[in-house]
Image (cartoon, rainbow, N blue to C red; front, side, top):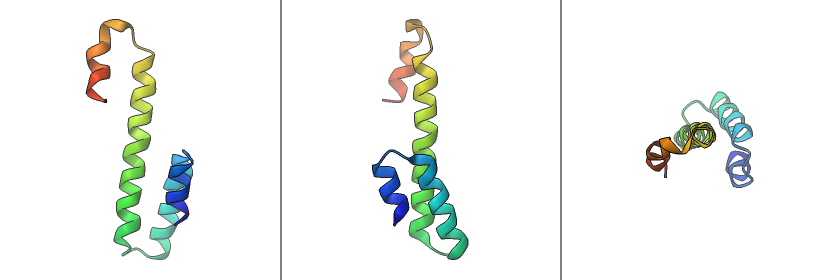
Length: 67
């Protein structure tokens, strides 16, 4: 699956698009659906980690939650 390759290359947004396309073509594909959920979770985690990096050190406890 191209989405898996995209994830391994760190291209999460591209992977999400590929899993969405796979589901458009085969709506009952449970593997594509699960991989889409995982890629979306990775994208959210990456966004949260980037946001937390911009916080002052006083918010280090929030950073620990995602690790």
